[in-house]
Image (cartoon, rainbow, N blue to C red; front, top):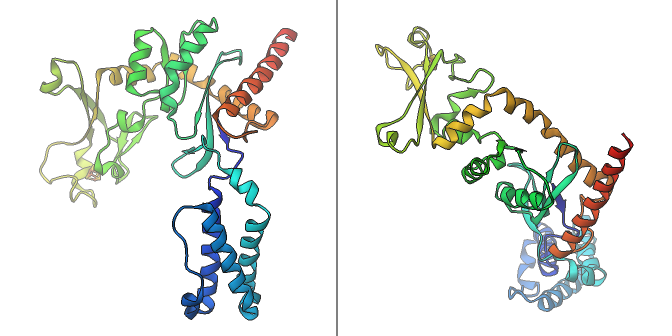
Length: 341
Ligand code: SF4
């Protein structure tokens, strides 16, 4: 789960730099000639020099009453002045040295920490690993298993999202005889080809659909000679109905008239991946995967009922303490509920 840092992602100097830049931009829009009359900018990375510069800039703009009275200028001027006068102490302390920027999805980022959790089907948290925000979830799997084991848990299955299905985890799970219920990322299962946009994988049918909207009619699986010995690398070929291709308005660059077959091939990289692909299709996998919602519910409980969405202090050590106390409380509540059932 993600915890946002208590403080800003920016240091005091970076914040001043940003506000003074915004003020200058507003001024230039009104009077481009003023540039040469403003105090010289500093760019040495020293907070004290940045403060002196901002003070000079504020004084210079205030001298020109007309300029300072433009709403856009006055608003930015006041923000900069308030930052310099009131908030500086807070800002100086504000950078959380340990927090980092991480990504929740391709489009959403956050500044803070991640807590990687392991939980039993009874919803008791058995292990937690607190890291800075940019750390990859999949890399924590082994640590979580070992921590859970040392807490006396017998680990038979792990249910996680696709972040946990990286090759080293699949190998680790196999070695440890653990069922890893984690879907392979689509680029592993279905290649990373350039014309990916033209052929889309339909996971329910287990077939590809071409850009004309036709689904492949059969598939084959083969192993190229160079991989035959080591058992690595399978190529899956998906075949389309050539009768449709012959009359397809989009066949240019896709199907050559006269060809007897039209196929689209993807490579499944390693044997361990092929095994996981097979496992993904089993009833056991599908049944266990349904339980994944539980960890999301636990994340929500931690965040929304126990304030775990924002760090209560600064630094990784503080985050560790917050994790320990919060998880202890959440587990205790759960134990009482279970005892009452
Ligand atoms: S040529 Fe065949 S495979 Fe290509 S888009 Fe048309 S129907 Fe689909």
